Length: 190
Length: 190
Image (cartoon, rainbow over all chains, first blue to last red; front, side, top):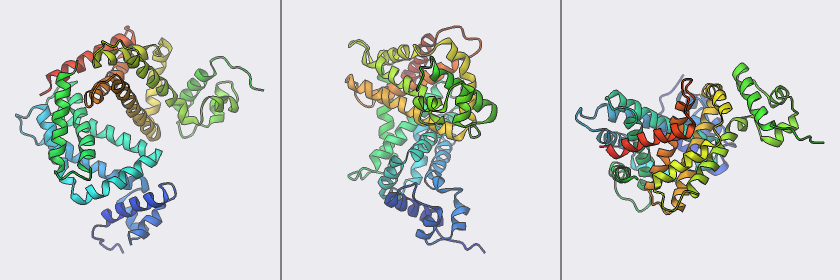
């Protein structure tokens, strides 16, 4: 009988990152992750297909939020304003506990070639998803591709700036600031 | 005794792509690739560490050529002109036989999640390498990052356009055309 476990997913992610960080990604098993989280292996597999997905599941959520932000932006929004709306939308997933947790997660991904590759693919997916959402608003190619790239750069670089120890500002504000810097660089590019 | 094998590397790449295409990436072994190429397993391992690298080795060559093009552009070149020089430089690797071969290679990568991930990481490397080369010319951040992204987009989209069956133009011309389109979209972005 499956019990309902409050926050099981979040507990599994934290346990996985702690173990990957302590003993390496390759040396960590699903059983160990479940044990550390105080859950069973079958609870693990109700949430994730394998240990790799524990870390990339967050990016699926980001994809959905970014696409939603673009789809629900006002009809009058320019491509860049729609991308800014996507950053506001994904900011809802950037809770303070994620911020505290991020440096450890970043270090774990950086240490594993397999995770770095997965991460690069997921990043490419974020750009695709945003470009598709922009094209559905009628933004032509290559403007949609370019605006989506700016969005992913603002997301990535905004995230890095947001998790800096000295930062006090919310994610949306930081990411919009990066987007404005990128836009200024884009219009001045020669 | 190692014999010198003319074009061994190129033969191994072609044999690998043929086999991956015929029987799938996962089902193909290094021994089969060497056999198909008429070479020994040890010759294979003198050229590549594993079967995955057979396909991504080309991207290392591209990275080097792109960086060289930027480094050797005239001092007076703007960031965008330096990126155009990078595309000219990488064009030296785009021989007609590569063009004929590309659609099969693209299909093989698309069919394998492992190869798609590797590909995404290599693409990210191309952007990093170009951004680093631009920064070494004194191009500030985020202009360097942005110009490098435009360069990778021009490379990818230029490649797709270059391998179209109806295309008769050389890679450098097609890639520079895409770069100009991206630049126009960047300066007009609102």
